[in-house]
Image 1 (cartoon, rainbow, N blue to C red):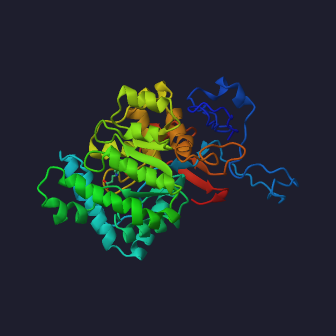
Image 2: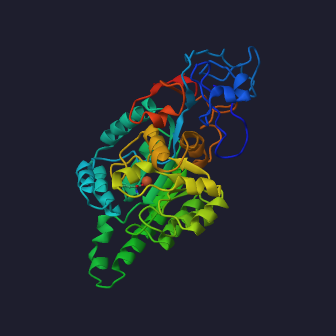
Length: 418
Ligand code: NIG
Ligand code: FE
């Protein structure tokens, strides 16, 4: 593992070198011997930052002795940073998935069936399931993960989800604006109004709740606010209300946008200075230009297109325009029930125009950028020792050997976790 350069250039700042393996290669796929830097970086340890013996750190404490781990020529990469998941939920939607594979279209409304199952689940059930997901993520090399609420959609149910998520991660996102829950959509006050804007009125009334009592209950447990700005979910105006209220409550902004069709999500995210806009499946040239001129990361979620049979987003177009791109799993029971970042990397390389190096960067440092984190997603002095040893000589194998469990050992903050 070599120290990464500090270059701010987004697509190349992870530098993983597979020690002394004869088949070693640089992260851009060129043979190891083509890199002069590689010659001087033949480290074979893969654990804690080398501590200088007897020297005190900034806090005055003496760092522990370094632990040296021989990776035997295998590749070591930064732990994956999964910046978009929805891991607290009840039930599953396997039948909906099977129907989609036979031709049924994906619709945002399917979210409501998971809301019903989540509300029906006990807190202990949700907590146990979440704990199992955390193990599932770690064993696949994910060492930092974000979790959104969004399957509660009442004050008490959303509060429960952000509180449970907060037990396992600092990166909690309040997504009360996921869809309009059934009790608002079917409320006779709106439904029987007989006017064409009845659905909008139900959504507006629900947004009043989201920006009021629900946000007040959830903000103390959350770091981020998100809204699903899409046909069938929330309009740009409704999304803006939620995001601005969240920001006023001290939360960072992230947006679900441009998933099911062209729309205003990307423009809204850029205008609000969002850390990330996620999905980005349907983008206009103006959307791409706006992203390129912004600090908003475009987070692509290939698991969604895989399991909804939508076209994959064009990562190449974004990278060529200078946009910072992240890859995330979007693990949820509806649109993408995978927690495998390696799978996302493989699809991004196979079908989205990314090189293996760009895809690995997007799944690590890109995810960190999407969470505005500088302490994870890269292997360099000053970052947390979140490391994954692959059962492979290079990161290229993540895409080259799809579906094969290549994660051999995982360290989070220097401690073995899988
Ligand atoms: O990110 N797009 C909105 N929300 C989720 C899907 C949730 C679901 O279908 O249950 C997503 O794809
Ligand atoms: Fe999502």
